[in-house]
Amino acid sequence: MLTSCAVLLPVVPFLLTEGIPSGIMTTETTKGRRITVIEGAASLVVDLLIRHQIIENQQAPIYQYGFEILISSAITCMIAVGLGIAFKCLFASLLYFGMFVVLRSICGGYHANTYWQCNMVFFFVTTIVLALFRFLPISKFNELHYCIIALSILITAVYAPVENKNKPLTKKQKTIFRIIGIGMTMLIALISCLLLNKLRNSYCILIDSTLLVVAFSMFVTDPMRVGEKI
Image (cartoon, rainbow, N blue to C red):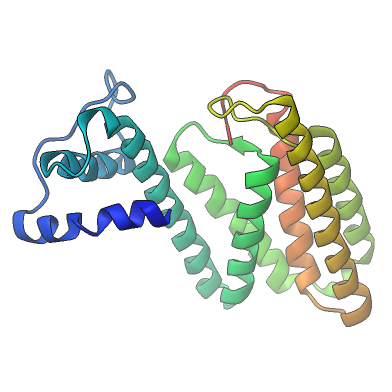
């Protein structure tokens, strides 16, 4: 991400002095269908980089994909921040976002077919997680806590990592990611148990909800073995 941001810096003066170019580069991923706003925005940036000889034409698909991911990630982060402000729990929302990103990067999980669908799913899931954190009484969470912990660890042990068809893993990598995924899930679960039993802190609800979201994402994706996966 830092590299992509660094590449954007020399583009800013051109945007300010020359404006957005009217042409949008057409690639294999956009031929025959209408491109999305994210794809179009990424394409504009890549087109600028090519026009000003910052990158070569043959590098365009790589940068196109990179900028799409960067823009989509920025939108996802803004959703988390916006909902955190709306629910008056910005720190909790950022904590959830951080745990979600780290766990998903290791364990994998379901991804929608388009960026728009992906962001909408994230919006609704984050809304549910933050609503539970803000409004579910911790006194009613004891039994549910242990069920969620057990289910999350079990699903992670069975399904992690869910492989991305665009990023195939070797057998060794799968083993490493599985061990890391199980270890991280158990460590986070232990922290949640301490928060609940020792401190009676409602952040255990946030942590458990995050673990459940990631586990459910793996569970619904693995049997499908079709569609898009992260």
